[in-house]
Amino acid sequence: MIKILKKEFTIYTALLTLLIVLMHPDMISNPTIRLGLMQEKANYIHPLLYTFFIYLVLYFFRALIAFILRLIKRGKNNK
Image (cartoon, rainbow, N blue to C red; front, side, top):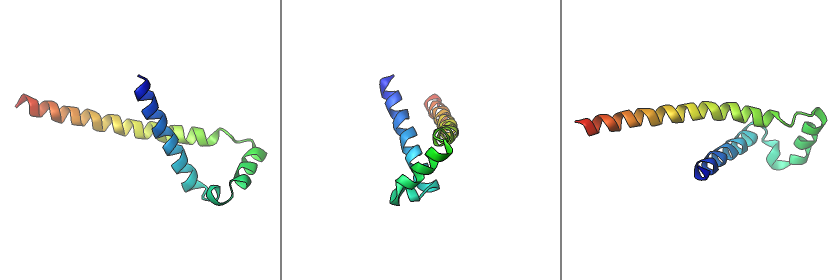
């Protein structure tokens, strides 16, 4: 169970980092300005929420692909 949680946490963290860099490229050059804006507007939670929603979509597709692969594998074993 711990192994699965570590894997999912790693995927979530990588997705969060990727989204931060893609949506706010100024985080690379000058993160203090972006963090100051977040503090000024008090919107700390929105990156986590956006990442969570995208993570859920990716999780759904990962589960769907795993299910299809299991069906294909099961079909080959029955022949």
